Image 1 (cartoon, helix red, strand yellow):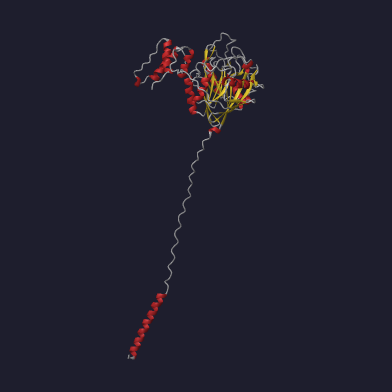
Image 2: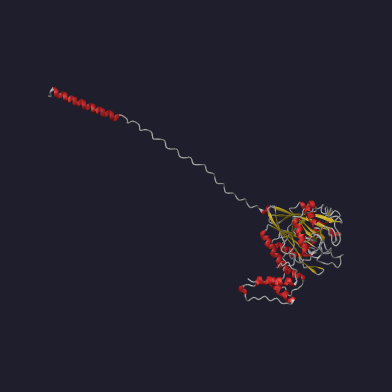
Length: 477
């Protein structure tokens, strides 16, 4: 059918296409060469180490003040010796006069006493004594402040009737001598002591009926002052030099007291008012004998701690030579926790020593029950004092004294005014009256009250009435 040459040509084409198909088939079946692996990623940069911010400080939890404790040792009147008008100083210059009682005073967080007389080297008295057998002027050398330090005292009251035996200059010297020795003080108008003990802020306020003192008789002003310190301090301690004097005044009359015509205050009214205003511990001195104690609104009040350490002058015979060291434990809120009476006695010429018969304890226990019925205190035979259940104390009512009627325009009233408007001048003097008038004008004359004209009469009695109204009466809005 085909020629030989045509067949050969046909075979050649078939071989060509078959070879081409084989090549294509082999190429189609062969795997492609693997792709080169991707380059490894660049390592991430390592961040620079950074300091961790310090954790926020965790605030310290407020302490539970009811769990805190503070101890106070309180004693009454002290006069370690006088060199006026003659030398009546102890033979060893007072070095050992307080030695027997020092361990008890040092054991407390705060030790407080009432310093009768002044600490001053030389100087003439501002008072005169017509009868030296019944009237005393006390002047102790300034070096005697160190005896107080060595006995463990931290604070002294200088609010009493002997604080001005050598005038205001003597009082200033006393304050300086105490301060130089590291002892705080309170007593002069506007002079109060503050300190910190066991993490608690403490204020000490001393009152008396003596001129230019924080005035006990001005109950309203005292109440305002106590309240102001109570608002700013954890613990407020108040002492007062008030009440009549003598071995026959151990009982509290619950009324205004006098001594030789001098007003000595209603001590129960004053002490309870102080507690109501925020005081946590109140104690008194001045009668020269021990008086009762009570627990009022969970606070301790001791109405007189008697003669504690009096080297010369004031009698220490019989019960007038018996006195307690009253050691009181309060919690951080000021509540009375427990106490202890360390009974002492003084037999001259020695200083106070421990009374093994415990007469101060016996007297305070008996008087507290006799005067208050339920004093709210349990007096144990070993001297310990514990809180005891007490019925609610009935509140006494007092007349509104905003306008107390005619003013007794005499020295005690002058010093009540001075306690409100301290001038530093002799109360009642012409210069003092002029300063008081100026202070009242500044206090009350305002443009919005231009209708107000303060007229101060020349007549002293009328002048006192006008001043009494503006000092003790209602203030302008």
